[in-house]
Length: 136
Image 1 (cartoon, rainbow, N blue to C red):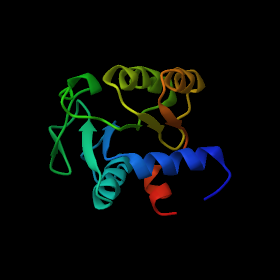
Image 2 (image 1 turned 30 degrees about the vertical axis):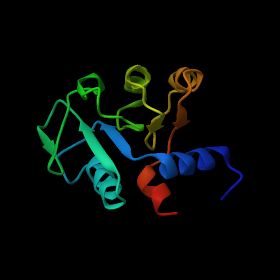
Image 3 (image 1 turned 90 degrees about the vertical axis):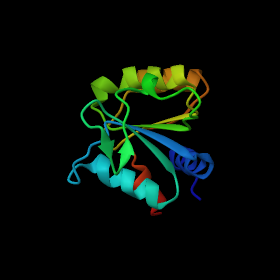
Image 4 (image 1 turned 45 degrees about the vertical axis):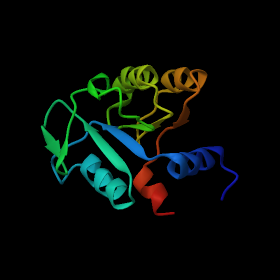
C-alpha cells in the first residue's frame, strides 16, 4: 500500500464494494467504459450499466439514469464515464440514491462535485480508473 491518500481511498473502495453503477456505459467494445465493465465483471463485481443509448451492455440490462435503478438494488460505487462538465449532476444523483462512493474516470475532474460527495459521506476518487487500480 502507498501513502498516497487517493490510492488508499481507491483500494478501500475496491476492497469493500460489490456493486458498481457505470454511468456512460457503452455497448461498443471499442469504448473504454465497455472494457472497464468487462474488467469489473471478471473481478467478481456486480455491474449496472447506466446509459439511455442501449438496452444491454455485456448482456446486462441498462438503466437510463441512476434514479431508474430499482431502490432494492444497493449501489456501492457510481463510476462516471462522462465529461467533467457533466459529472456534477451524476455525483448529485449518486448522493440521492445512497451510493457509498463516487469514482470519476481518467480525465474526469470536478472538485465542487467531489466536495459535495465528501460532505455527504461518500468516498471519492477522481482521474483514476478502477481497471488500472485492480491491476496494481
